[in-house]
Length: 307
Picture 1 (cartoon, one colour):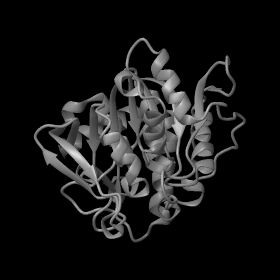
Picture 2 (tube, one colour):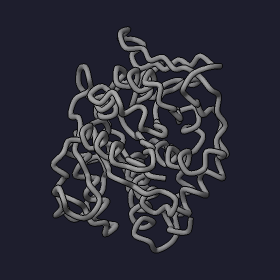
Picture 3 (cartoon, rainbow, N blue to C red):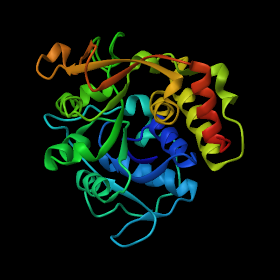
């Protein structure tokens, strides 16, 4: 499966990136970055840091070799992002890694998404791990893009459970509700991985020896989780939100869905970012149940390089 990762690292984004690159069943065409968990400057740098740690070559110029990393939106379609440093730690990862020598690809994220989708023989799957600004801008700029996409897997929204930013809204949809509305209304098949299943798929402090193995991904995964728990003494659970989106792309049978159309609140300040599903017809598969142990096993296997 050819995929583009759109991401805002973020600790769980870093885990998800490593999972995707470790999977023999995903071909990552490029990575695009967006503001959200951190500024877009930090999320881009964090992506390059993770790739350098893994030894993945980065394509920094047109015609070069390696994996392109394209910087995207620094602001949502309206307003500004509310960053998550309080949760993810200093710089957005909470750990220090050697400075990357690679630089981002010259094309901006919406342009690269459209170009890669147009040039690919197989239809592309977008896996969106942050606010949906880049994808909404790409869809608006290139009206033909929607027909060239196989699917968009979105980590976002809170459907039958409370939000994690406000009572109503999840972090990603709260940060750019207008972009989420564009994506859900695009007609592209969407698999939505909301908080409903993310809150079920979590680690506790007792689980910390969870990621074993000597792979570069396993080593960094352990370091990220130990550092996160060390910096969050009042928290007992770490929810594997973005890794679960990779699980949904790879093994959708580990989740159970209802077909729906999804509306996003874009105006009411109190309910901003709220996602409301109307079940029946619609282009969105909403994940409402998850095989927790199966999902966690796949996450570990990918980070260990055993999948």
